[in-house]
Image (cartoon, rainbow, N blue to C red; front, top):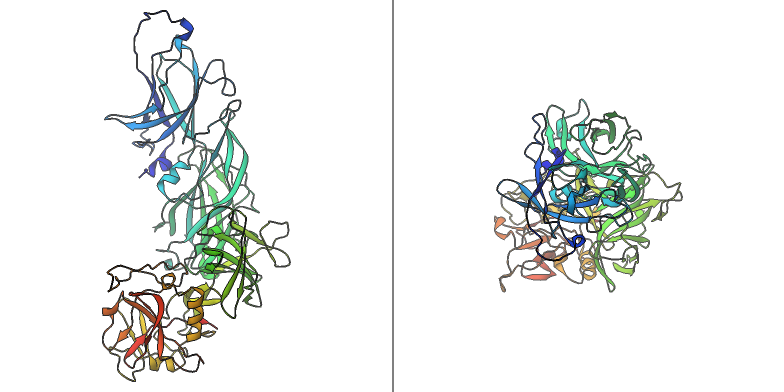
Amino acid sequence: MRKKSRLTNLLNIIIIITIFFTFHSCVNNIQEDEEKSTTPLNFIGSIQSLSDSRIVNNGFEKGDEVGLFAMINPDELKEERYIDNMKFIASETSSSMVFTAVESTFYPENNAEMDLIGYYPYQAKGSESGTSLITVSVKTSQKEDSDYSLSDFLVAKASKITSLQKTELSFGHKYTKVKIILKLASGLDESLLKAKDPLISAIGFYTSANYDLLADDFSSYAKQKTIFPHGSWVWNDTLKSLVGKDFILIPQAIDSSKQSFTIELDGRVYFCKVPADMNLTSGSEKKITITFKPSTDELISQVSGSIQLWSIDVTDANTSNQLTNNTVDISMLSFSSSNIYNVIYQGKTIAEICKEYLLADNITSRALVVYPVTNSKADLTKGIVLQLLDRKGNVHGGSVSWNEANNSLTYTLGTDEVHDSFYIKSDKTISLTKGENDLSISLIAKRLRDLRTGKAQQYPLVKIGTQYWMADNLNTAFYKDGTQMTKLTSITEGAIGYKMSESGNYYYTKGAIQANNIVPNGWKIPSTSDWNLLKTYLKDNGSLLKSGDWNAADTENVILPATNLTGFGAYPIAISVKTFLEEYRGDLASYWTLNEDNTDLAENNFLLHKNNQNMITCSVGTTKAFPLRCLKK
């Protein structure tokens, strides 16, 4: 794994060009202008040792690739090149890191002077003949060490080099590092932020540009994307902050109307505009401190820039909090709190984004779909497919229309590239094209908020076809009116209450369910008809609902697939029978079911079993307790 310390601490990489002298004499009649030098060009990489710098003992690693251009004076890069974008690969020796060219490369004859330009990371295209421009980029996801390292861009230059001198090539950073400090507002309980893992992203930043190797500047910016940072959150007791996340960004002008940092925490998305006076200068390291007030759904951001390792420039800037944005960037959404997000304008939901499973004659794929919402109800006949998560190519941007009577889908194929964002027009319609008067909206994960105990318990939601399900089982020891249920140790006939497993799963008796005071407002116990609608839509494929570790099938001794592509999350937590409970873990998942008329409990409950990939049923009996999964009315 690549060391994180190179990007954290690397300031200058010293390349010592070591000359390996080889003597030979001309014993034939080859013309002088056809003779080639026999002094090979290799690179030995080492790190400049500075006692006051943390870069000591950090450097290139085996397999790193560096590109090199060499021009014989007085030629320039735009003119004739003696070495044109030659790749050198690092190989480790007992005492140093040697860079060897992929092809034999020698100094020119007669000690001709050369100008050298080196860069990292190597790219095959390099700088084309007749220009000094090279196209560079950063990774949109910098989470992995390898992608983080390849998001750096280093350049070194040396002039008038001959084979008779030892040369030092000092590589310097050309991008900007932005470190994030997520600070808890004064007076708030540390638990609101400590030990949490908020998702942060940088949206609207250019991820590609041309860099001029001679003029040392950037131009032709392109590809405004969402960027995800490197590192892991660590709580700093002194700062009362989460630290440890940073981005590598291409230096660029700040446009506060388009660029922002976003934070998703506990299902809420917060926007923090980048201040226009925050300069992203080459080789600099900036700190952005975001003071967070989760209890009031506010972000207050104070930005200060300081240079710690990359350069000596120091700047300061300030910004204010903002919870709205006129670009709905879906790439920044984690879908960890729920498979559905509400798009809110002036306090009202005007659209919803669903991560769902599309299944029809002409489509089988997970997808991100946006629907318009009017009077709190999504119009399921006007869905726009932003992304097909299991398809590649120009297949996105299609449309979906659902038949709510039979839970079926009509899908129209798309021909677009992936859509990372959409916009809400002034008339509240959804558009894939940015306009001048797009509405400024906010985003929040759509969840079921259960307030029966005076404290909100939130459940994730998932849309499957036209049905909206809880994506988790009901976990409460209280009836809806706040009355506490009886906790049981054994399920006997006529028992009313619940049983709980050691892992915290709840199982309710028939009597507790029949009390009709357990289901959250606006929700219901699914009926046999509801389960059959789900079964028909998914073509009786239970693997699409199964999640977690299931035991092997008894008859075949193989583990049947549990893909959970729908996001339903049916874990095999089993049921409770008399005093037995954990003995059935891994074998099945079953849920309370109403009869066809929705008037009483059905004689058989919905069941997923380790021995069967179909959706089947099991008898209720009088000494059983089952989990409860609710369906929106």
